[in-house]
Image (cartoon, rainbow, N blue to C red; front, side, top):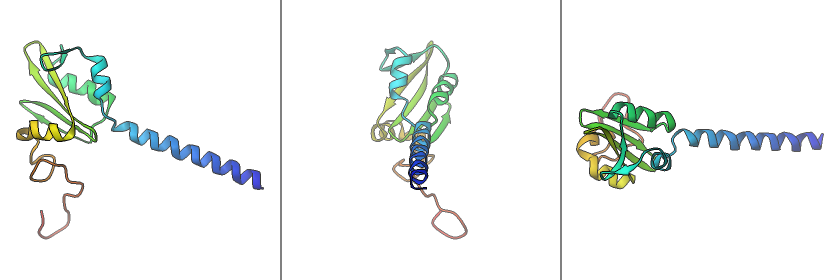
Length: 133
């Protein structure tokens, strides 16, 4: 009986660890993957594909917590990075910034779409009837 309880506890702990890694992996920063997949140049990373296709490839690897599609490009928000995929003469250029730098650099495109007045994403955007919206 005691061995069964210990074995069950170990299995449960392993399950929790696997679940945590799976959930965390869904929104991981794509910084390392982008640097290994796309050549650097022109102030960022280069892709021969248009921004929407390049962003789709990045999203397929690392799901962002938020995204903005704009005529100027595609902006992806991750817990540890902001990725901007902009049109270039022969495809697109990818910029990967820290969240602070990304909000500052791209606020004209993401401000008001990712939450609060400073462009910072709000965890709670309100709900229900009444003020505060």
